[in-house]
Length: 106
Length: 121
Image (cartoon, rainbow over all chains, first blue to last red; front, side, top):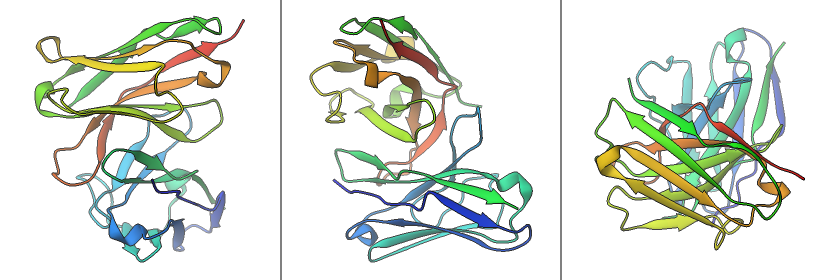
């Protein structure tokens, strides 16, 4: 199964672009999802199938996936985007989550 | 909107057993595969188990294989996780999570609020 690696933390200034990476061998060969989790809350799906946004997720959230790295990009980051973010992949019998990235909006 | 409500968590001694339940509503439960995902205090998400809509496919994480059993009752819109031989490292919030009907790969579109399982003497 995949072993997904994320940076433990990312910092960004309000209004700037935040980039969170998720690395795994041949990750580009499968679909990746991204979840946002705020303290005390359940995870929320923000990107699925690499690039798609569920209904209700702001357009500032976007995703990409190529070769060994998937990327979550938050354009015009807002204070409300401060949260933990997890990437996730599936290899037909196993769901794998990345270790999570704490996004701090300074 | 989709509702997933877990119950059954609590304090249990090492080696003990517990059964978690998840009551699903506001969607056609029998059409969706389901998962259990857990999160240890202050840690990241860890997938535990998957069950297809008809129970024909079931998968487990290596960390729980042989100790946990996932099941569902589509007539009662309920998902279960039977946990045996519990260890302190099983201490976590356990989430019931629905697979989105997108057709390819695993996408979890709804999560319950979670139920806390604490394994300690």
